[in-house]
Every structure is written in C-alpha cells, then in structure tokens.
Length: 238
Image 1 (cartoon, one colour):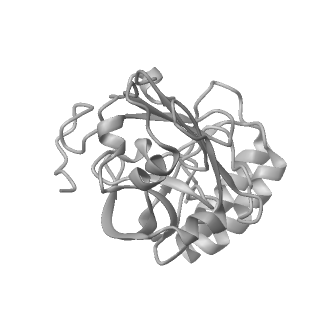
Image 2 (tube, rainbow, N blue to C red):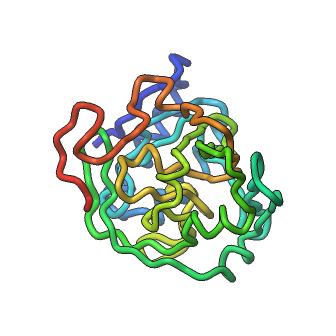
Image 3 (cartoon, rainbow, N blue to C red):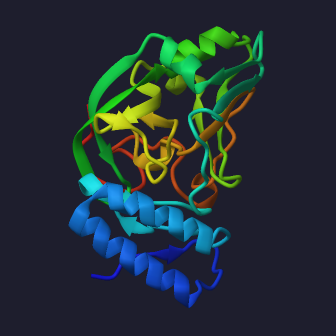
C-alpha cells in the first residue's frame, strides 16, 4: 500500500522522498505510530525542505499532515512564547506547562476531509489559563498561533480561545505527543476541525483583530465548527 501525499506548494517531490513515504506508509499501517516516528525522522533528514501535506497514514487511525516537513524540538528545548497585547509577555518551558493545573479530555479528532478518530485522550493546560497568566488587554479580539515549522499559522477569536475545551496539549493517546502529531506541544480545539489544532506550537500572539491562518488563506473557514462549516455535514463533537 503506497502512502498518500500531496505537494502543497507545487514543489516537485524527489524520487527518494517517494520511496521513503511509501515505506513509512506501509510500516505505519502494519506496526502503528512508533515505527512511523522513526521513519519520519529519516524522511526529515532526507528531504527537510519539501512541504508535504497528507503525508502518511499514521498510528491509531490518524492521517499525518505537515506543510513544511517534521520540525524537531525536544522537551528540554521547548519554549512557548505569549506576546502581543498582554500585560506581561511570558515564556513557558515544557516543565512550566506540566506544573500548571492540567485539563483532561476524551474527545474526537475530526478532520475536515472526513476522517475521524473517536475518543482520543488529551491532557494539557486550558488555553484560557495561559492567556490569563499573561493578562489579556481590553482591546484584544483575536489570538494568533505560530508553529516552529516556520510556515503554519492559525487563529481564533478571543471568545473561542477562552473556551474550556481549547487546550495547549502535551499528551494524547495516553502518552507524550510525538513529532508526527505535532509534539512536544500542540493546540487542541475540540469543537473545530483538526486544521485549527496547530501542531508544533511555538508562540501565541494577542491582537486587535483575527488574522487568517495558513489554511484560511487557502479558502478554509475561519470558524471551523464541526458540522457547521466548510460545506460539510459531519455531526458536531459536542
């Protein structure tokens, strides 16, 4: 079974990349996410500059998406910056996040392309708690998220960001988040399609307006409520 992939920037994909993707796809299906993780590391070294999306079928029923390869950041090196219209800009390490009150959820992960992984266990820090640590200025209307892949961005309204089912996640599927799933830290927006749950979360910036993210600039809905956006009729998560 060959891996599915799509070149999101019309950059030709090298033959050796195709071979690696095929291997990752086959072994990912047969043996799950751990072998896929290892092969993804190989892929990122062989072809670090090829932006690929819908890369491989991953473990636990997920399909793996990336627009700029697989960036690597260890838990030791990880930093989350909160800037913009805040009372006090903050930087949180991975250990800082673990010390904050955790939020536990068991929720579906729903992709706008139609596939769904039910009852995924998530652990993280409520985004609202992090924003409150920095102090939200009165004029804030939008929250911009950036990935350390250098390309991927996303955004929410402030009201959306303050929901209790939007978390900065550091665990999913009962274990630490792997590189392929956007670890060590990613966003998880439970009531919206998966493209809002930005991987490899690097920074959060508060602004006076909502700034369209990567996928919104390609035509996807800004308000990506499951079952009520993007022309789909999926059942909402909640």
